[in-house]
Every structure is written in C-alpha cells, then in structure tokens.
Amino acid sequence: MLGNTQPNQTIDKEQKKSGRGRRFLFNALGLIIILALSGLGAYRSAIATRQANQRAAISQQLGEQFQYALVDIQFLRYENAKQRLEFIIANDPTFPGAQEKLTEVLVLMNAPTPTPTVAPTTTPDFSGAQEAFTRAQQLIAAQDWPGAIGALDTLRKLDPTYQTSQVDGMYYFALRNYGYNLITQQGNLEGGIYQLTLAERFGTLDNSTNGLREGARFYLLGASFWDLDWEQAVYYFTQVYSGWPSLWDGTLTAADRFRIASMRYGDQLLAEERYCDAYAQYTNAQLVGALDEAAVKGLNQATRECYPATATPTVTVPVIVTTDTGVVSTPTDTPPAPPTDTPAPPTDTPTP
Image 1 (cartoon, one colour):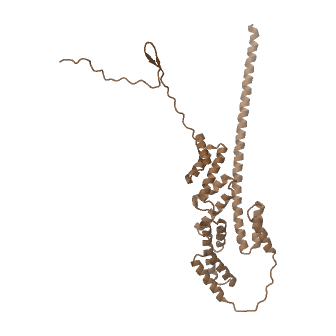
Image 2 (cartoon, rainbow, N blue to C red):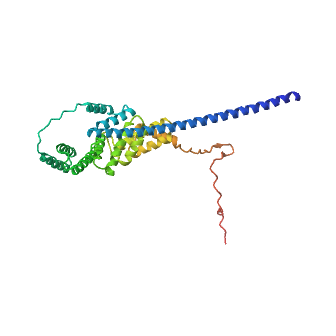
C-alpha cells in the first residue's frame, strides 16, 4: 500500500507546483495588461489635452485675423482682407461671418472703377475743412465719440493733409474711448474690439485698454465653447473673471458665466466619477453665487465620495439578567470606577 501511494503523492505535488506556476503567470499577464491600459489612458488624456489647447490657440488666432480683416476693409485694403478671410475659412469653414465678409470683399474688388471727370481748376476751399475740424473738437469735448469720428472722416475727405498729426491724435482719442465704452457700457464686445483695433493704427494702446481688449477676446472665445466644451469654457472665463468680473456681452457677466460653466463642468466630472475634481468645480461656483438644484445635489454626492465620513464607534449596551440568587450583569466596555483611598468613618465615636 505504501508503495502505491508514493507516486500519487509525487504527482499531486507536481500538479500543485504547476497550478501555482500558472496562477503566477496569469497574475503577471494581468498586471502587464493593467499597466498597458493605464499607460494608454494617460497617453490618450495627454493627447486630448494637447488637442484642446491647439484648438483654443487656433480659435484665438482666427479671431484676431478676422478683426484685422475688418480693419483692412475699412481702409480699402481688399487684397489683405481677402487673404486673411481665406486663411480663416481654410482653418474653420464655419467661422461666424467669414464667408459673408469674403463675398463682400470679392464684390468690392471686382466693382468697376468709375471714370474720373476732369473738373475745372479751382482754389481749394479750406473753410469746409476748418469747420469740420472745429466740429470734431466740439464733439470730442462733448464725448460724442461716433459723431467725432464721423466729423474726422468728413475732414479727411475734404482735405487729407489738413493738420495731419493733430487729426491723427484726435482719431486715436475718439476711437480708443469709443471702443472702451462699447465694451464696458454697452456689452458690444465685437464692436469695441474693432474700434480699439482701428485706434491702434494711430498709436499704441495703453495697458488698461489693451488688457480690456484681451479680456473681451477671451470672453468671446469662452462663449464659443458654451454648451459644447465646458472645460474650455471654464478655462477662458476663469481668466476673464479674475480680471474683469463685470464684463458682459449684453446677456451675462463674466462672473455669471464662470459660475454656470463651473457648475456644468462639475456635473460632467461627477458623471465621469471624478468626484474630487467635481467638488472643486462646485466649490468655485459657490464662491461666486448660489448653486442651482442640480449643482447642490452634485456637490452633496461629490462631498460624500471625495470625503467619506469617519465610521461611528459602536457602544456595547450592558445586558442585565435576573437570577434566583441575585442580579448579574454582563461586562461592559466601561471600565470600573477606581477605588478610593479614603477609609470609611468609624461607627462608634471613641472616648478620650
């Protein structure tokens, strides 16, 4: 019997070793697969982030080129405007207004040039230019910027050489203030950017005005991602909110858009089970204003998942059992009271 069982024991040991080897191999393969998937996920995340940054940079560049194209049209530089608009359409065929402006430029470029009529030589009338110059000064003093710009345009048509340097300075002053007011008072961001870009042709913008123009551009870029990419919307409106929280486009201020975009991005992160990131977005929104109902529920869930509550310790309740000989209680977690060192008073009073 012993001779028959010995080979079986050897076979069992070999089978166990083989089983352990297979399990080790499977565990190693599983670990390799997990590491490969993690690396792939990180790679895809990095690629997505880089692509999003590239899209944002291209959108900003296209917006600047569109503004420059409008300036070129204003100064009759149709060929430059055509090249800029074609560049915009090549990179983004759906860019708002690009196709319409290109059609307008092509029509203006192909319009027949009127034959000039030879007028009799007369003495230039400087009185009209002087009147337009005085009128422009009065309108600037009254802070009527559109009227002042119109008077200066009339002056340049009457006599392009009249007080050239002074007229250029008046153009700069009127265009700069008109653009500033359009952005800060009327919420016309596109119009304000356009007027400031025109003013830049006559002089360098001051830091405050140039910063305001950049804030308006970032506002428009953030609005272009609204309801499409909340991460990019939060990125741009974070920068606008930090510098110009009251900047608006006629509908919402930068502070309101930052709050709403943060809430919606928090909802998105919550759905992706990125609870701590969602908690940060909800908290940022809450610093600006009240959360809506969906964001309140999301904040509560994100808080529970990101900061789980500490478990409450259990307390053992003593069980009292009555027997024939007396009352016996089960031991509890509460330690017994320590004995006192004070002796009990005597029952009889000693006599001297």
